[in-house]
Image (cartoon, rainbow, N blue to C red):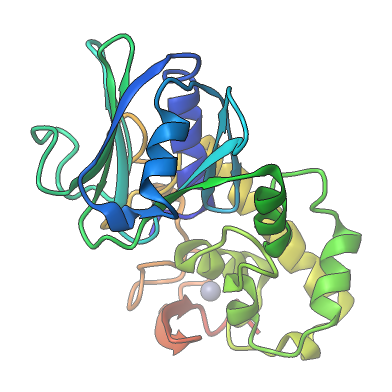
Length: 287
Ligand SMILES: [Zn+2]
């Protein structure tokens, strides 16, 4: 699944290419990809324009010119991909199968936005967990408020972080993965955060002292900002908005390195399960 840095990278790519173009038509190949009433969806989109694209956690928020509803939401979930080919370049993000350079539309194309300049935004999804839906301002704020702290924004303060973590007693990694606690972290970055903070992923949050909590907070800030800067991580099933591989993969210190030597101390990186997810850690650097 694309994590926060990957979705942010897609957002930036699309923002530079699809805004303020009249949407002439929308083709829905798979009705279940659209949540809510299909004819209302089509009526709201056709003739409209995207004026902005924002993001909350891994949810993309397309702002519509004509309201209400004022927003179109897209969530890629596990295997969704957004592809916007132009003459010069291919803006694409999400799951890399089928290949971004495959013929479009293909059998995984479930939704197409046709713009006035003859260009098309394709929403493909191999396993069909992704979705799109219209949202009013009220619906959007409800949804936005249901997510936890957003790393990379001014609201992600040490005080806000401490208030949240102080209330919980559960394994650190499962706390990090909980979207209602910290928004946008997935399996890759949760492992990296734990290593950088020097904390074992299965350690209970209730046993951490303030300096360890602060180390976690700082590690989240560092890792998310570095990963966005390097356009995310390409690992197995992710490529970025130009179909290029994200550059963060070479910075991964622990994720995907089971049986290899820890880059800090030379011990062998271990792999286990925490919160039902494959989890990598250094038994010496992390406590
Ligand atoms: Zn180590």
